[in-house]
Length: 282
Length: 349
Ligand code: SF4
Ligand code: SF4
Image 1 (tube, rainbow over the protein chains, first blue to last red):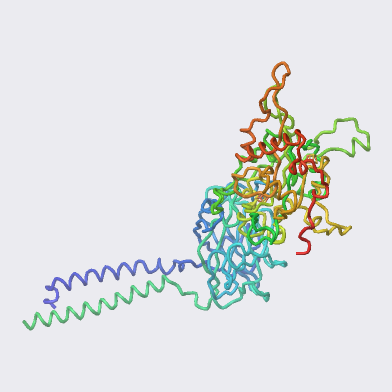
Image 2: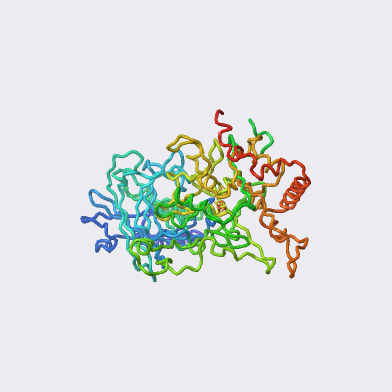
């Protein structure tokens, strides 16, 4: 034993190793609590949360989703104003509720003069829930289903296969409720989208699925004349409807760290033992 | 095809065209009213004048439309210049009058807008004109959509909801596809697409396509209502590529009918015979040899071409004054009314 203690390099490695283990042990609870990147948790609830002011929303965890200007050929496409949106989701046995909350000090409800544009928000889903279509309105062979709310008090359900291809569902199944609300420091919108989980209609995303469902968010600020491709959008996120809530990158990272640590322990031990022997032999 | 040496849009069989002789416009607005009664008496269209008659020099309708951008950056038609959407005030509000009360119930009050105290409206600056007495001047300027050969409104639409139709180049907004984004409104340099805030879609002059197709109750082909109703019959309607028609002759052969603001590069298919005003007068009423409407102003509207056009008109007129014959003057004087509307020449195509 005394030989090992004398050997300086093994000592150093062992020290680092101990540090790593302590660090990962300390981080572990944090990491385990953190959600997988891009997951928007879906809380099981008993009651309808269709009202954006419903009590029940206070128990639903929120994901803060960053937004950036969508790439688009329309004029001023990179001039958008909304930087992030809080997304919360809840489900009963029957329905999904998604609440979006974002800061927007100007309340633009009308498109009733030539220059007036209304605030809008949309959720985008792949029509085929197991795929992830092109983020910009899907593509011709990988369609997206879009739920669009406008502050003019209009909700539409759309189908798109790429920019400029939007068509409107004649019988929308999505409904919305919106309210002005305090978001962060100032005024903003709080909008709930809701739809039955189950659908039997072609080209409509099936939410009663055993797989995670991708979702993306888009926000338009009417005051800034945002419309069409001039909008702030997210990357693809997902609702963890899958059987394994994982796919979870952080847990994977945790296991990887642990694995490396174990391997290092074995390696260092082996080296030290060999050194000790060599030193003994010499 | 008949249009070998006429420049019309790719993929278009024939191109409808209109020539308006500005020398004959009396600003009566009969065309405006004909159009309005036919097309824009629906909800949301009250403020729209697909056909408007403005006074020049003046700010036009919508106000200062020439400063609102749109069109193309060059004749290559690659980059559009982004425009802006005129404000409701620039168009003028929708004025409401109490005709009922005054005319039927005999109320004793002035017939004036009840809902607003307007400070601007279509042709608000009528008769203002320019110049100093006795050499002041103005002229009336009727405008419709130009059904351009390179329509920047079409290019502006991300949904391809506005299109140039194949059979005759009429530019139309597909009301099913339109989602009210208004890129066409800002993209048209002539500001001839209008947003209907009730239907939440854009609308524009349709060149009275059901009339030119003979789809009306009498199954007959009619020219657009603005032309048909024009008090002085100053409009010729036909196809640019109809080489036997007067439009072709005025535009392509004599080059006296000119597009408005050719520098916008949309290649309009509405053409104007530029106005020729009486010469200036001296203080004591003597005629002097100076043009009343400055060429520089006409160049602003029609480009340098206007000089050749006016020179040609002057030359041909002088020829007739000397007792000679001029085909151009005959066309401009409508000596052959049968030629005024030639809308059935390609009917058998
Ligand atoms: S005048 Fe304007 S609206 Fe009409 S075709 Fe030309 S660009 Fe389009
Ligand atoms: S009807 Fe004819 S004369 Fe009267 S304003 Fe219109 S274009 Fe001019």
